[in-house]
Image 1 (tube, helix red, strand yellow):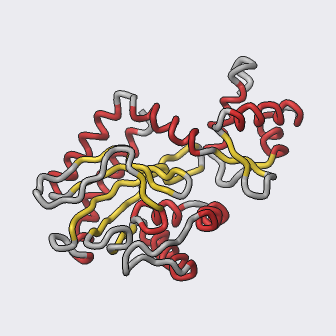
Image 2 (cartoon, rainbow, N blue to C red):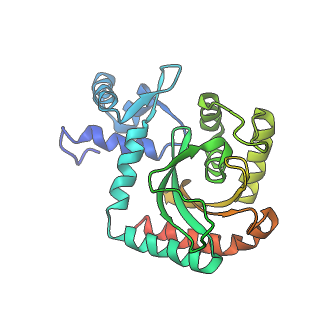
Length: 253
């Protein structure tokens, strides 16, 4: 951070905070950047006013705001490697015969960063930029399962657990038990929880920075249950996992 000019130093905080496993206090960030607390307070105020940072509900810690997440992945999506990522999704569709999407977490919702539709006449279409609740989607549950517990609890606290189908889980304790299984298994299923008749399988895309490994995106396939039931969709897991590893490599290019 010391290599940057004064006007750019606050922006380096975004990279620092993205690597943290928990929201940070002003004192923690000041110590990390080796700057006086008044200086850090000024930087944080500027980034908060720009909508790039936000305070946790208790007002004592700072975390990335949804705008910062959208900005990061807009930049990612405009790099040359984004074409490679889209081609990887296309290959998955060719192999499994179902629609495939690349998603990121934005607050309590999952956002579609990219998507390739299957060629079936019967398919459920989502557009790039579509958003779905995290608690009842395969990708969303995966993100929550793999994040630090304190952050997961905050996402659950801010989510409105509404029953969208007969299969939607709205009991927080039941959901937490499932998230523990997902954390162990490294994949998640949507068993007609977001939309009746739709099943989904998601796997994580990890990025490693130093000693920290975090799930920054998810790769998922969706299918009508009449064509691919909950048991059959799991047979596609190896294809998804291999593609996710290939996608992870593009994040460092």
